[in-house]
Length: 195
Image (cartoon, rainbow, N blue to C red; front, side, top):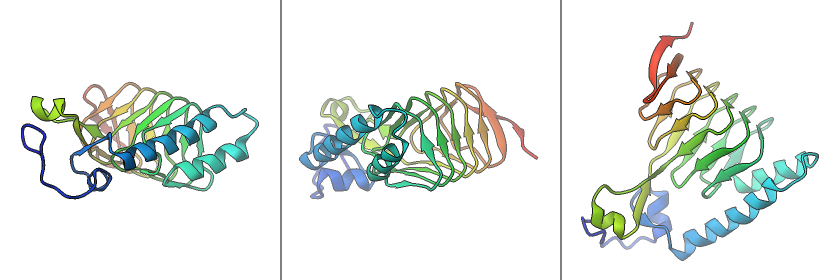
């Protein structure tokens, strides 16, 4: 735990702290090595010719923590680390997703993600001293099976979206959403249940 000035007596590495979901400093050499790996793979993925689908799939499988059978990601695709993101089977990610995965991102099976969606796990301290000292954190995001996120949806840190739920285009999801509902707005609110 950091105090109001951003200091800590924790002996774990910053990468260990990040992976545990605790406050950390991102300029740690281990984290910077992870970022360099991601930058290389992401650049290669985003610059492949559209006909190179097999190579894109191989690179995405190398980049991500899991990339399920039959899933597809349209480029460009952006992430922080890659290995913190797990995508189930038969899921589809449209153009321009930003997946800031310093916290774990879990995307289920048969998920549809519209263009320009943002999955944002990073957090920053509200205390000015700790924020100035560059401490940050992350909270996981979980997207259940058969969810549809419309274009431009933003999912904030710590959110879980239940199976079969539909989130309308442009919505900002700041709290958990249950399974089997339609939610829209900023902040996203449940507008009806699904049969």
